[in-house]
Image: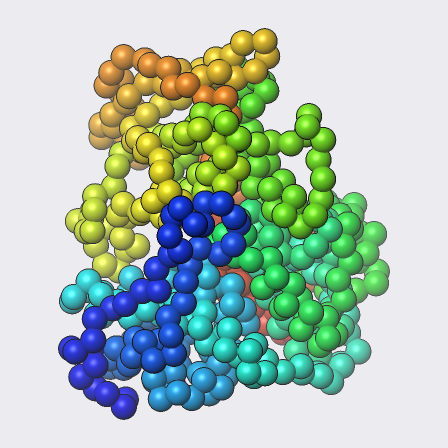
Length: 450
């Protein structure tokens, strides 16, 4: 450590976001960057703890103290090499990871000011591409072939790892481009799609083959390609969103969140849709049902499309601010999260249950909701929902359902077929999907070397 007292002298400084009145008029990334001096100072705050809980908390096992120290000393290439050892896609996680490492940081628990690991990671990755530290590797081929079904973060991680091991890897993707949730679920204002394209180009130059518009589903689909590959990795994510079967669900203007998000990303990529197909919030009162990150992404997208207003409702109680005694360390702190999209304008309400979608001439005009409360279940398990107020109507011409995804079920596959990421574990974080893809690649390698 070059400055062992930095954490005592330098406070946490985040790059922050572009001004609201500027950013809501485009889909450019909202997060700004620090200058080199400030970024290196932020890296110097890492205490190089005797027990680095950041490393323990990261699903990828990132060695934050090591690359933070290199960054502080201006050794950007060394920092990238250390980061690359554990994380194949730091340019992704540096933008969208909730930073489990920061919630594990000793400084977070003692001062509330964790080291800016996520921003540091993004800065290292961008400097690596800018300065040419990202080089093309040419692995020696071992004569075996592996198919990866799905080009989301788990599939990309598995393909990348297997390719570098020497396997000839073909990635089958049902959509027109790679990225999965990164491309079709996360808005451009959080992750510019050129960042994905840049990484895919590296993987292609290193030998990974991508086949787009190629849907391989079910046992029958796998059997079609099984004869051509020594092993198959299924990384198809969680394609089924949780729906809300309330009366009026069939009304026009009620959509699953990803229908809006994926279409908007495709529009930005140059695709066109008819007026009948287009989902837009322009001039509308928008209601988002679901209080998570996907709901937040819908809020930001609605603003950029020119909505009249946005309301977000959540059936669960409002989390506490700052600290939650019910989720002590080492649990993930369930506390109130205010995103850049929330800052752009949104009415947020908790403990609200959806009763019915209301409409006129086949189009949604509002949603009947009711305040509720929760009480302990005497038999244990999920708390019981009880009425806590009279039903009311929230006006809305566009309703977006952002309530998560269902964990897929799989049949029993042959021993050379492996399942990873959300397809195996249910919907989770991008960083966990990447970690699962890497781990699955190791399992494939061990299997094929038997």
